[in-house]
Length: 245
Image (cartoon, rainbow, N blue to C red):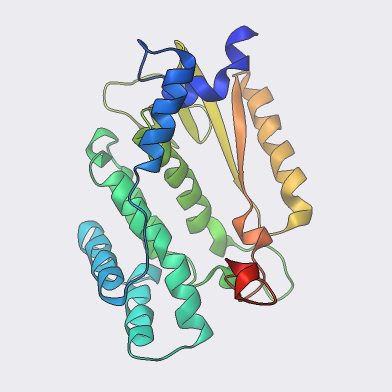
């Protein structure tokens, strides 16, 4: 179908109906590129994490623990745990920046964010059992992928109708998939999958396709492979600093 050929562009630019497709796509890219880049500076990073825990009233869990590991790092304690914690804590800061101005439009999403950023192991490495199998410990980061993708779509101007079970105020229709969005007058479903194994990427993608077919709704499958491609207990992989740049 013709509308499906332009799906990605329309999904990202559906809030600018008076512009051409190319203009809307360019508008979306400009909005996404305007998301403040998060760079690391000890004091600023600590302050940003404190804003997250204050906003969500988090007192325990991984985000609260990241404050300690970041503080330890700033004091010269260069352990693998501290370095990896800083890398992973960027996600909490970006979720805060994406959602703090729009969370009121999705009743209940703020409590969901609190659970996501409170639960789960300190590091991604803790999501896997000694035998290498996925464990229930990965649920918080799985949910984080969904709300992170939804937040970026909203920031870019997409009319997101629901994020998981949380509907946008004024929308009472079905909440298909992990994310539902209005595109060209149609409800589009996005199924989100996250895997920690390269061997399971195809499996997760096929699961998402099966869910779309079962629901009989048009949509796409978004797959987060960041945990699958990052080497164990490493942030970058290379022989020297040039390879990691």
